[in-house]
Image 1 (cartoon, rainbow, N blue to C red):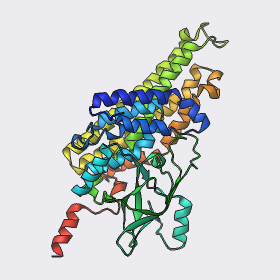
Image 2: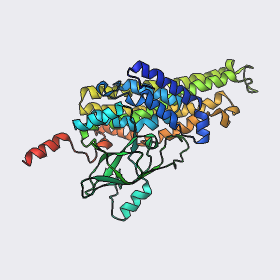
Image 3: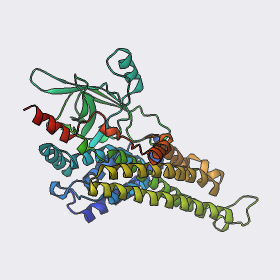
Image 4: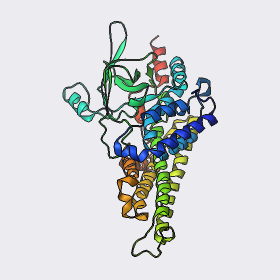
Length: 418
C-alpha cells in the first residue's frame, strides 16, 4: 500500500490501526504478546513521519498536535507511545541537528518510513562492575558501551543496554556510547544487524509490550552519517519532550479509564446491598465516581496541553530561559498528572465492584501501566527542583546537556587554534 502523502489521509490510516490495537490490548497484556505487526502498520501509515519537515516527506505537525495524537495512541494501547518515544526523540534531535548533511540524510530516511529505537540506559550491575574495575567513573549516566575505530577508520559499537524501549521494533537504534577517551555521544547503528541481540527480559508490572529489555551490541557498525546530537543546540528542550511523551501516555490512560468504566457501569446488572437504587446507572455513589474520574481526566488533558504549548513556545522563541520555564512547568504537570491518573486508576474499581478485579475485564492494567510510567524520571525529585528555582533561582541543568559542547564554544576554540 502506498504511503500517505497528506496528513488527513495519514490520520485515517493511523486511527484505523489504533482502533485495531485497542481491540486486542487486554489480551496482549495477559499473554505478554508484542504488537509487532501493528507497530509496523503504524509506521506504514505515516505515524513516524508526524514531526518530519514536509520537504523530507513528513507532515511537520506542531508539538501540541503530536502530543494529542500520542494521547490517542495511549488510550488505544499505552505501550505504543512508549515504543515510539525514542523515535520521536531522535526526530527532535534531527530537526535541530547542526550538521546539515546528517540532518538531511536521516530526515529523508525517516520521511521514507524508517523507524528509530532507543538504547541509552545501562544495567546497573554492568556499570557497577565497570566502576569496580576502574573502567568507568561512578556518576549519573555512566556509559560503558564503547565505540572503537579500526585500522581502516571504520567504527564499531559493543556493550549492553537496558530499558532499550522500541529497539526490537526499529530499523535503526540511537545508542549512547563513549569513545576511547571517554567522550560520550549518540551514534546510529542498524537495529537488525547480526551483532545486535534483543533480549525480551523486561519484567515490569506494566508496559509489558514496549520491548524495554536488554539489548546486546557485539561489534555493530556505526552507520553512515551516524553521529547525531553532538552539540547542546541539537538537544534543547529534550528533557521536557521525553517527559511530555509520558504525560500524553498518562492522559490516554485517563481517557481509557473513563471510557471503559462508563461501559462497565452501563453493563452492570446489579448493585450492592446498601445501594440507593437497583440499577448501577442510577446509583448516586457510582455516578459520583464516574464524575470524579472525569475530573481526573480533565486535569491530565489540561496540563498536557499546557506543557506541550510551553515547549512549542520555547522552540519558537529560542531563549534558554524559555526552555527552563518549559521544563519547570512540565515537571509541575508531571506531579499533578501522575497523582490524578493513579487516583483515577484506583477509584475506577469503586464504580464496578468485585467483578472489575477479574483478569478478563483488564481494568487493572491501567493502574499497572500508569504506575510504571510514573516511575520514569522519578517524580519524587520534581517538587524540590521547582522549589529550588522559585526560592533560590537555581535552574535545573538539562540532563542531555551533560558532557555536550556548545557549537559556539567549538567554533571559538577552532578560531583560537588557527
